[in-house]
Amino acid sequence: GAGVSQSPRYKVAKRGQDVALRCDPISGHVSLFWYQQALGQGPEFLTYFQNEAQLDKSGLPSDRFFAERPEGSVSTLKIQRTQQEDSAVYLCASSADPETQYFGPGTRLLVL
Amino acid sequence: GESVGLHLPTLSVQEGDNSIINCAYSNSASDYFIWYKQESGKGPQFIIDIRSNMDKRQGQRVTVLLNKTVKHLSLQIAATQPGDSAVYFCAERYDYKLSFGAGTTVTVRA
Image (tube, rainbow over all chains, first blue to last red; front, top):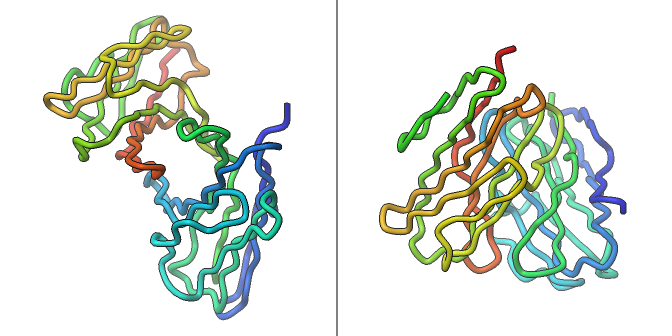
């Protein structure tokens, strides 16, 4: 079956621009996670949804970062007024149970 | 090639040899552990998992060992193949959050 998909795969933004990153989880998966992966590092937790409820946003780096999942399926991670330090790979993962998280291919964001 | 006990950021392995990748985790309350493989330009791919009430689990060509006493996790890959070249991450789960260790880049020599 289809895995987690993310779009766009690559995004180049000028400093100060707003960006929106989309995640389509595996159909039926209740839980959805966003992670940020800096070059050469492991993924770092950003936020967690169970259905449409955002249960944890403790990993979001600043109030410029905002995530939503209004209908409990597709999720969008929005970054306002992008900064160079926001350049990273943004990964989405979904899971049907409390354990195994399946990752999408990521969106590579470069802020110039 | 092996790196028993010690986490190394890189591991070079001869094709056909067995590999051992080590990982130290930090939270003694973590109840679930996963190994992921990440190839260049792709997201992490699930390899194998283990719960904290187990000390060994085997999959196809892979074995995960868990030593809770010293908070150590290892991944053994049998008969390493060129397609095994990637970055390998261990992750520990506490509650619903995954925390990832420092990755190990595995390079398979022909």
